[in-house]
Image (cartoon, rainbow, N blue to C red; front, side, top):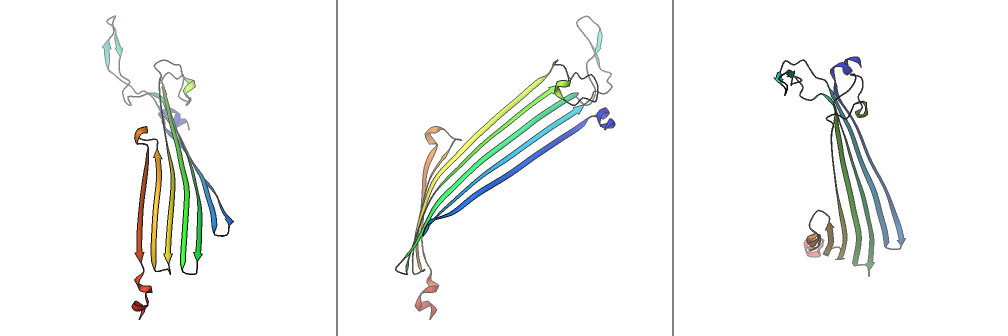
Length: 212
């Protein structure tokens, strides 16, 4: 520890938490409700403590006196500290209805909702005038020449979606999908959009004339 104090160093601590909960409920016959909620948390604390080294660079000041103008290597001396924090919330929920009619007709209807919210922050500070080498906290120095920085960003996504599928005798299949998606990352005029698609399929291997 004493050598660390005398030579400086970098110190990083990281915390990362991911948690999820869900509920899967049979609301009634053929109707199922599934909901998931999740949170992701990340935090990083970083410190860099460095000290001046012997320098022999001098320049005259306003009074004509030669003064030391460089602290040698490294260029930075003092304490740099940053803190980064990110948190994301996710919610996903669907209702799913499946029904078989007259033995051969299979119908499935799904509707859902999804939302994500994210916020990240970053704050940092530098201080230089420490009374000794053992202090590794910003408030252990005076405010002379201190500097501060910080930033934040956030975004959100929201979606409504649906799916309809039908099959006959497990041989002929039809499916249609539609989504209504929104994002905070673009201009409000273009924030929302509707997207859809569909498909059809034929499982020929189940046809009588193929089997024989």
